[in-house]
Amino acid sequence: MAQTKRDHRKLVDAIIAGVPAEQVKDRIIELDQQSQRLERRLSASPAPDSILTHPSMAVTYREHVAALISGLGNRSEMGAAKDALRTLVDRDLLP
Image (cartoon, rainbow, N blue to C red; front, side, top):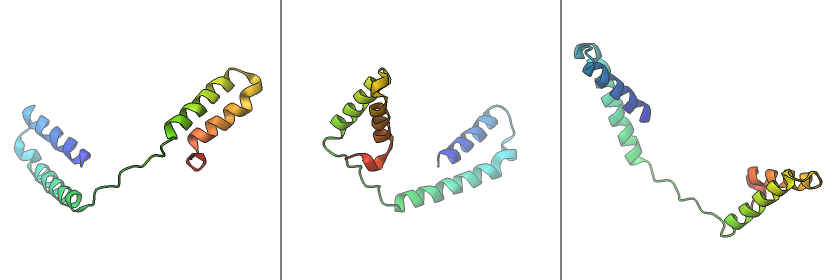
């Protein structure tokens, strides 16, 4: 839909810039039809479910970021920093 709107806007800008409307008329009609089809599909699609987060997710995130920062500054804590980073990027390890 966004691409269709951008293309339509470009054609309108071309007309404003002096390109004869007859040269872009067919493409504008095609884009209008595509936009209408997309609108119908969007209106027929169910809304996505809301994203649920675990109540302690913010606390857990802060703890892992703190461990990562601490570990990056201290060679002896580098293992803990690696574990913290893995936890932050691996969705299966989060609570």
